[in-house]
Length: 80
Image (cartoon, rainbow, N blue to C red; front, side):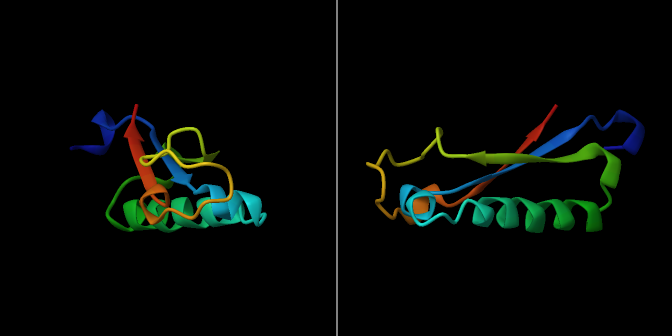
């Protein structure tokens, strides 16, 4: 897609309940930053890439607080 046609890209780093309980919310941001840097290296303008806060609401596998679940440790890329 040509840069002129590209809209904003939101990169959201998700974490699981165990990471939240241990105070590791920064891990979601680190996941998002790594993916954002990859997108920028692939040619998407840095100005179009937005890092979004950690999101624990959208767990792939619903778990109670404090439970580790690797499937909930992911990064989402949403093209606006």
